[in-house]
Image 1 (spheres, one colour):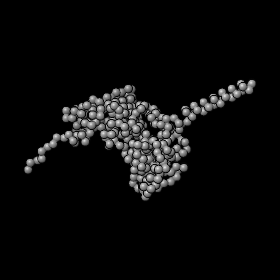
Image 2 (cartoon, helix red, strand yellow):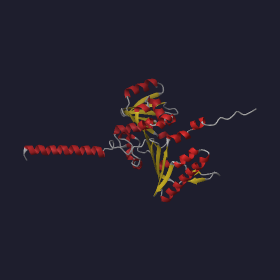
Image 3 (spheres, one colour):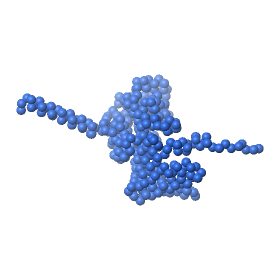
Image 4 (spheres, one colour):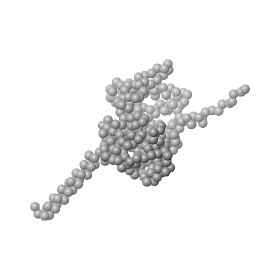
Length: 330
C-alpha cells in the first residue's frame, strides 16, 4: 500500500472512530439523553420516584393567568427563595419535582445561578438557621436541622439547584457525582414520561403505587350516596396556558369495562356541575368545556377553559360582585 493510500485509510479509520464515539455518547450515555419532557439535567431525580411533575417556568410566568393569579405561585418557589435567595421567576427555566410521599419529595430547579454569590447569601444572611457539609465534593446546606420543617439544598452546578429533605438532596448529590442513571432506572415512570404531550407548560405522571393512595369512592348526588372508582394503573397529565387553559388527563384502567365505568363516573360529575348552571351560569360553561372519551382500557379527559371563565369563577370575583344588602332593622 502506498503512503498516500495509507494516509487516506488511516484518516477514514479516525473519522469512523470519531463518529462511532459521538453516536455512542448521544444514544448510549444515560446522562446525555432526555426522557420525554425531562431534560438531561433532570436525570438525577430518584430512580424510585412514584410521581414526577414539571413546569416550564418561563412559559408559566409569562402567561396572563399567572400574572393575574399570584396564588398560582408554587410553594416550591417560595421555599427556594427563602432558603437560597434565588428568584424563580427571574433565574429558573424549568422546575421538576419527584417523590413518593411528602417527606421524600425532591425539587430540582434548572436555570442560571451565581453559585458564589448565593453561597455567600446563604452562609451570612441565614446564619444561625443553616449548617453545611461536604458530600462527595458538593456543599449541602441543612436548614433548621433537627427541627420541624427541616430541609436541605445544594447547587449541583451553575445550572441546577436541588431542594428537599436532607436524605433526598444528598442522594441527588451522590447520583450526580457518580454519574448514575437516576430516573432512567425507573422503567415505569420513564415509559409514562414519553407519553407527555411535547411542549406542555406543565405536566405530571404517576404510577400505580402512587395512585393506590387516591380515594376509592366519590360522593354522587344527595342522600350521601357514593360511587366506587375503578383502580387506575397510571396517570399522565399534560397542560398549557395559551391561548386558553387546556388540560389533558389520561388514565390507564385495569381493563376496558373499568375504563368505561370510570368515564361514566366522570361524565356524571360533569353533569352534576352543569345542573348547577341555573344558579351560576359559569358552572354550565365549565361543564361544557370538559369532554370524556375512552379507548380500550384508557380514559382521556380534556378541558379547555378560557381565562374569562376562570376569572368569573374565582372567589375574589364572586366576593366583589355580591349584591349589597341593607343592614337589618332594629
